[in-house]
Structure formats: C-alpha cells, structure tokens
Image (cartoon, rainbow, N blue to C red; front, side, top):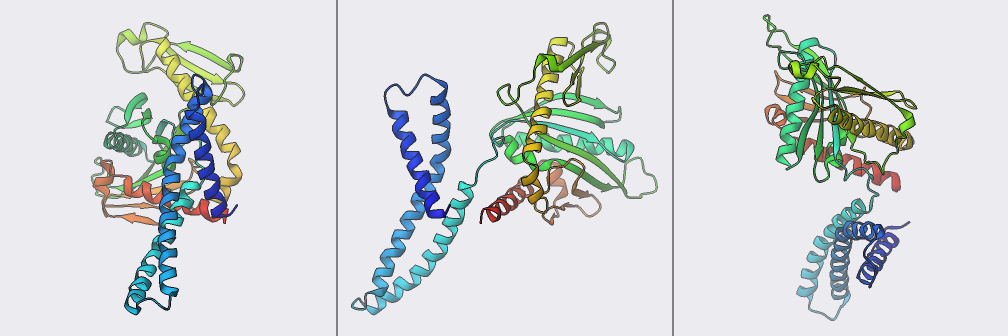
Length: 357
C-alpha cells in the first residue's frame, strides 16, 4: 500500500472511530475501551498527517506563485527560496509519518520482567550483574517507573548470581526490550592485586509482563512443589514450607520463588514470571522469521548474543549491534541510557521501514 493510501486509510479510520465513540450507546462494554485505545493511538498519527497536508498545501501555493510569469520577479525568487526549505520539511514529515504508520509491537506498551544473571567471571561477574541491576533501577527512577525486586540470589560480597525485578510504567517494554543479551565488562576487579584487566559477563533478559488474557496457562499444565526456604531471611523463613517451584509441563520452564515468607505471595510472583516466560516463548516462535530478517540490525534478542561492552579503563560503552561508542561510562552506569536506547529504537524503525519498501 502506498504512503498516500495509508494516510487516507488512517484518517478515515480515525473519523470512523470518533463517530462511533460519540454515538449514543457506544459505552458500557469491553469494545468501547478497545476502540477508545485505538482512537487515542491514532491521534498523533492524524496530527502528523494534518501537518504534512498543511505544508504540502503551502508548497503548492508557492508553486503557483513561482509558475506565474506575470508576478513580481523578486516575489518569485523569494518563493523559490522558501519552496526549497519546504521541500526538506515535507521530506522530514513524510519520514516521520512513515515511522508512525509502522505496526507497533503489541507488547511495547506492557510492563516488563527484568532478569539478570551472572555469566563467566565468577565473583566479578556477580558484582557486574549487581551493577547492571542498579543501572536499570536508576533508569527506571529517571523515567518515573516502578521498579520492584521479585527475586535475588546474592553472593555475600554485594554481587548477584541472579536478580529478577518487575518494571512498571509507560512504554517500559518498548524502551527496554533491546537490552536482552550478553553484557560484557572489562575492568580491574577490586580483588585483583596485580592491576590486571579482567573480562566478565552477565546475561540480561527483558520479558513483556503477560496478563492472563495474553497467555492461558492451564492448571493441568503446571506442577507446583512447595518446600522450605534455604536462603537468607532468618529462622522465620525456614520454619514453614513457603518456597514455591512451578514447572510448566508443555515447555519445561521452571520458576522458583522463595524471597517472601508467605507461600501465597511466592506463588503469585512465580506465576507472574512463568506467564512472562511462556508469553515471550510464544512471541519468539511467532516472530522467528522477522527476527531473522532483522538480525543484522539491532540483533535477535537472543540472550546468548553479545550486545554491549562496558570498558572501565577507557571509560567507554560500545553497543556492538549498531557500532555505537560513548565515552560516558559513569553516566551510563548511573542510569543515563536514553542515548543508547534511542539509537537502538531508531535503527530498528529504519530496518522495519526498509522491509516495507
């Protein structure tokens, strides 16, 4: 479908929704909420289309003046100069509209489950995993998102073998989804007396938080085991069978949760993580072909793929998928991730736009 046909389709659909929602008896059911959401999402697109049409009309008026040989020569010259400026503006607006017309990932508006695990590198990898956890926590704070710890497995020296958190807010998954993969750190560990640089790694997985309407998990498809917690928490944790292990039989996915003293709370958190993992597995299977097409751009989201290196001696961060290097490591580790994330999103949009042309 051409750009012009797409513009007409979007404007017509927006007008249709406006008429439907303003009609008597339109409210009071689930479809009203769904249509209202669609209407709101189309609003910015229609605004951009209207701006484009306005600028195109201005250009058309200038063309008429330029082609009018009977008009003042100086006026025609001024019109030609302004027409060149408008030509660039039209091009920019058309590109912006094309980006807005790209089909959104249905999970972009969802909250996320963030999972960080220490990889190769022993204690240093666990310390780096903890650094990444704090980096994302600060990034969430900067954006006004809610960051809630769900499960942690500490090493005793400030590191994490594993840490899982839920992140809630506006467009959380859309901004964090490209963080999935292997993050590598190059630095001198505090325990290194010789001053040698070590390379360690941690794995990050960002999963869209799934609701029951997104993925159905049959009670008959799960096995739930309860047992006595063995981690930190004091005697009160260890006197009851509060820990929960849920196994999803069709996929073999296993989730354990023991951070809470209440078995009920542990079970609820475990089910939340399980839904996210099953939902992401289904999404990955559906998007396999598209992901393969874009693998050379921002990567596949595969957790085994090395995506970024944090080099402390040189104070730089390099994202290998888009060959972006920034010399502001301290700020990045303090949660200043927008420049990297914005570049990844722009690169993905450009790749998707190229697919449609």
